[in-house]
Length: 255
Length: 281
Image 1 (cartoon, rainbow over the protein chains, first blue to last red):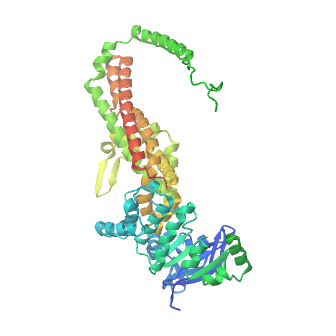
Image 2 (spheres, chains in turn yellow, orange):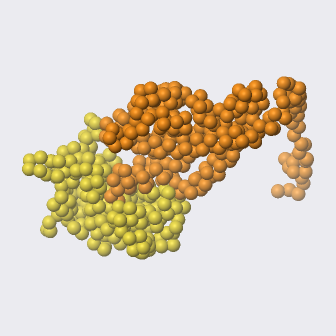
Image 3 (tube, rainbow over the protein chains, first blue to last red):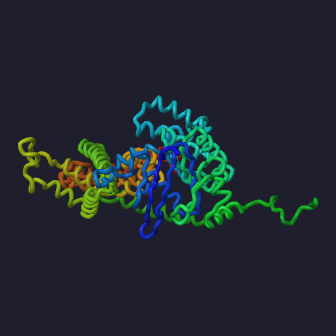
């Protein structure tokens, strides 16, 4: 096995009294497509948000490559990183949200260009060309000048994927990317994600789409109650689950 | 089903026009009352010729220009301070937050007239302003009626606008900030490029209202000798004793300016709601 790209070690997270993550450990290698499944409230979205530092970790640690997220080590001291240093660490990963979160005052093209222009300070002409290519890749070259409200949910989510890819991330995080979509729009988003997986992108996908997990991922993790109960190949977890909670969950979804 | 006309079909009947007796009655009543009021003013002790004569007098025109300019300057100061303090009051830094909260508390908590008098009389506390040995000036030369009015109106307005801007920022879905952070923006960049532009839709209408209020609020500056339109009208009637005539002149001009600005506000709001056609997240 190659050296892991992301290592989460015993990650703890509290919301007040609520213990959301009870020591979650996971490592993902470059090129892995890892699906996290589990009932709602199991902590899978929280864990994903911790990887992108939208939530701060209360215990344990997450490493990307040899970088510790959120802190700099000085001898025996951990020094919290500043807002701008955390912003720089986030460039490792791109994130796709359940509710798309496209910038409402910008067209599809402007959404995709915003990061490279405003954050990476790259040349506008070069960025525009690349953004158009990305929109074409997600099948929306013709809708470049449309505002988010003029797009369907599936189209918005595809623009959101292009926006994340425009930053040239090493890792893509998907937080239930198809849960807010009408059933007939799920397929077009999954198709873009499959294409992305085939191109070798490292992906962590929180999803309820077991078909997608089976077909595309090489790792499936089952979470419940803030813990990883079981992980393995899609065949192991989805077809021959060992833990009774996993068996229950899979049976309920397939029923 | 059958060819015979159904008892339920009513399309061949005519609809009688609705009668609006109430409207006619109220209109007649109002016309009668208006006639009485107009008659009273026409026969009252008002020299309408003097009203007409002073309507475009040089001093009045000068005051009108000052009123409009002060409105624009004070709103500009107010909006800049409002945005700055709204951002400060939402800062994670408790010191910055405290300073902004104090500013809003103080300037919303004291009357505008009092603030203006304090600025105008600053020379009583600090006869000289500046940094010693670098730049110094006598306070009475710096704090003119114009400057004192601008400080009083602008800084006071900033405290109100800060609350409007804060409300606008809060109206933007938090997912927008998260998406901005996810593409590597810092908190302030996300605020400037993503959140504030979308907050404008919510901020513009109340700020438009405050511009209208500001036009009238500038009249308070007459107390500290700023020569806006009411102050100049008063200066004239102190000399010629035509009090009501000159107050009518000022009234007419305020109405004219407010009407013009209201029309501007209408178009500004329309433009912004169109620009933000995609403003919903």
